Length: 181
Image 1 (cartoon, rainbow, N blue to C red):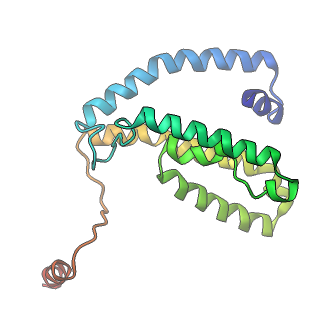
Image 2 (tube, one colour; image 1 turned 90 degrees about the vertical axis):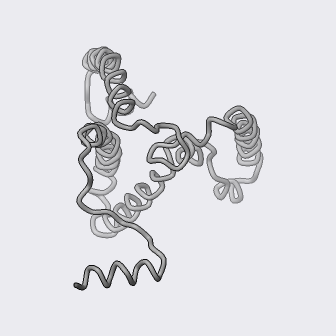
């Protein structure tokens, strides 16, 4: 359904949408295994707790599936059966599932995007309404596409130039003393 909505918004013909989906699917069949191989080679500790790419849900996955499935059914029932003035405050389980599916870092991206949209709507509501979906899609896509160069840089053992670390007070005093010399 989302493809048709996007096609409608961009005034694309159904034929061009079909051709682009075939091309995208064919590219995905080649690119997805290559990206997996890059991740596998670049990060030796994928899925290990406490690393950059942990898989914390794998141990309790089935239990979590049952619990969240039941919770989603209950929340949807409450939303559907409640009066409209109450139902508008009940969250959608699909929106609540995004951080679990993609990762918690996505919440920060969503917050920043929401603040930008809030300011944009205050400055020019008409342009914000017209272009916000396209800009948001581009930002989300760009964030996802960045993982490919990130894995290539990690494979080449390139370290980022800036690093943030939280130290204890005594260690911080030692570092400050060292940097002051």
